[in-house]
Amino acid sequence: MLIEPLLEIRDVSKTFPQPRTLLEVLARQPKRTLHALRGVSLMLRPGETLGIVGESGCGKSTLGRCLAGLHTPEGGEILWRRQPLSDIRRADRSRRIQMVFQDPYSSLNPRMTIAQMLDEVLFVHAPSMSSAERRDRTDSLLQMVGLSPGLKNRLPHAFSGGQRQRISIARALALEPEVLVADEPVSALDVSVQAQIINLLESLREKLGISIIFIAHDLNVVRHISHRVAVMYLGQIVETAATETLFGNPQHPYTQALLSAIPVPDPDIRSLQVGVQGELPDPLSPPPGCGFSTRCPFVMDKCEKPIPEFFDSGGEHHVRCIRAHSSTFSVPA
Image (cartoon, rainbow, N blue to C red; front, side, top):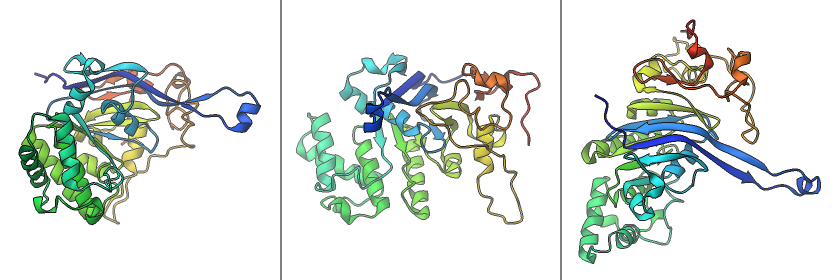
């Protein structure tokens, strides 16, 4: 029996109008629009970690910001327990969904101590708490992320990158959210520190029962922490599956290319490189139909027609590829 989704994303789109240069204005060229998200559909279950991977500029962070309420989608809908997220008050939404940003330094106020930052969150969103209760909650949050409460009166610059990210996680957990959107939370950290933060997130998920949307470039990290993985390309989800299914049997050509690029630690073993032709298309003018059609080694005429629907290959493995609808569909090993 499948668990009812906690969060559902249905056909969400997001665009950003681009300012014109002086030459474009003089030439009376129309304004162009960046298509950041194009019909994205996903779901997140309670207690689950969903990894989202893809190249820079594919729309991963934009999707995370839409979920956290920092961007407003133009199309589609986001549902929270079957209820439109837009119908939920902003204050209540922030209690349910919190975000951890990529750069742990720029996301913290350099002029406020850690105690002041955590106290501010509680003061605004939990006005019924007394100052003593807020102090106790601050100490508890720091201990929860592996920091000593004795450090709370220091400014952010006094901490290492890993410690600052722990502080960011503590601030995100202050309101006891049910969903944590982690946008590249370890990409700015040393490898050894990355492992500590990943282990911390896993521990918090198990202890608190929260769900995590984990956005990252590092496929090995995503494989380690995620229950399911969604692959994004040019503002679209092209494949979703359980982690081991996706890594063991990738069906979309783009997913194949990503996985084949993972370095193999043994120099005597060479992985099969799946070639990708050409350059990433301009998101200001995405190709019609499948966004990957301009680079796919298996492209057909049908790929340049309307965007293909998701194909369910079984076991909740979905792929957005016209070849998947064919009875002769096969993926090279």
